[in-house]
Image (cartoon, rainbow, N blue to C red; front, side, top):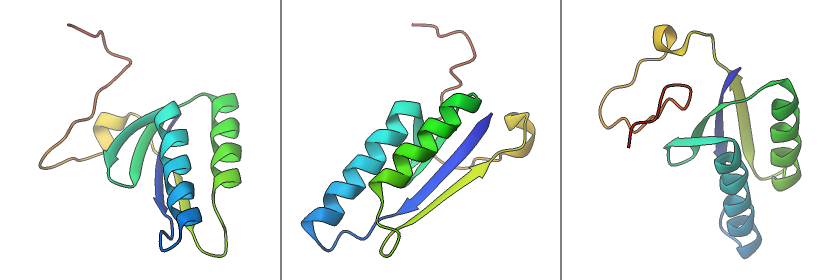
Length: 96
């Protein structure tokens, strides 16, 4: 399943800055950054549960905002991207 992760972490304290880095790192472990605080991830059911658990462990629900959207597939049909688009489809063959 394809999911979109969007987050807004309060960074006015050192702890908030650490939370921001931890959230970004968890997202990088499962997907790719498409905007500063937005990641697209392609995960199976078990990975989705782990991703959500790890993200929820990173945030402070009183200060931060985390949204997880399940994208309708096929992605190419429902996602429009304009401007600088660095998306890499990891399901396609990788040519070096």
